[in-house]
Structures are given as C-alpha cells and as structure tokens.
Amino acid sequence: MKTANGLPLLMLAMFCAACSMVPEAPARAPASMHGMLEAHNQVRAGLGLSPLSWSPQLAAYSQDWSGYLASTRGCRMIHRQEAGKDYRQYGENLFWASPEYWSDGRRSLQQVTAAQVADDWAGEWQHYHYGSNSCRPGEQCGHYTQMVWRSTTQVGCGMSFCPNYGQVWVCSYDPPGNWIGERPY
Image (tube, rainbow, N blue to C red; front, top):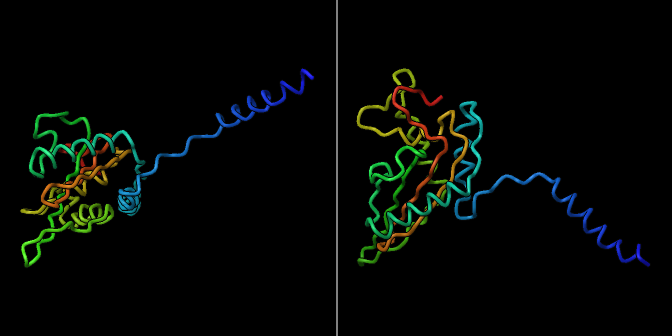
C-alpha cells in the first residue's frame, strides 16, 4: 500500500524533472507586433547577417517610451537620448503615423501594421552609401543602419495611440548601433 500512495508523487516528480529539461522557446513578438521581427530579419538575411531575437524587456522599455511620447509629449518624435534619458543604453528607432483626415473634419486611426513600420525604415537602404558610410544628402538612413547593425542581437518594440488618433512606434535595439565612424556591417 505504501508504494501505491507514493507512485503518484513519484510520477509527478519525474514529470517535473522532464519539463525542466525542455529548452525554453525563444520569446515571440506579441500579435500587435506581428511582422516587425520578421521584417527586420528579412532585411538582415539579405545581407548575410544573423537574425535578431525578440526581447520582452526591450519591448516593455519601448512601450514605456511610446506611452510617454503619446501622453505627455504631444506625440512628438523625441529620442530618449535627446530627452536626456538613458543615453546610448539601447539603439532606438521612432515612427509616427498621422491620423486620417476626412473632408468633414473627422479624424480616424490610420491602419498601420508593424511590418509596414519596419518596411518604411528598411526602405532607407536606398539612401545609404556603404563606401562613404553616409546617407545621401538631405535623406535619412539611420533607421535602416540600426536595423542591420551587425552586433545588434535583440529588438523589442512598442506602440501607443495619441489623443489625436496618431500613433507612436518605438523599437529598441541591444546592443545599440549607429556608432560614428563604424559601418553597420
């Protein structure tokens, strides 16, 4: 009888031990960020770079900043570094989506996906000149170079809605890129 009572406990212990040996699955981007990680990694793969992994910690960090910009900064694009916060701890890309304006004066939320945001940043490749390691005059390419920075291994992003129906998107990168004098890859 003693063995029968101990059998369920033994089976539970064996099950728990087996579960602890299963490797933890890599973190996945939440549904609201579907396509963000994939778009980053597609661009990186085209250059032969290692894929980024999704960081829930960076996502929370980004969400906090997007919320701050949406609620207290009037949805203006301000990098943490410009605001004097967390200088160069992480790399950062910002994106703002305007509301849709209707002829009758209404505003509505523009349907923007995470993949579209990443694709917009990736589109800056055409303004980056590898030979001179610079952007075409008058154009931006820093979002693109951060996406493809060779030593960056993790990304996490957040998005907040603005009171005027605009949107603020923030992605944070670890380790940061865009170091002056260094090429991204």
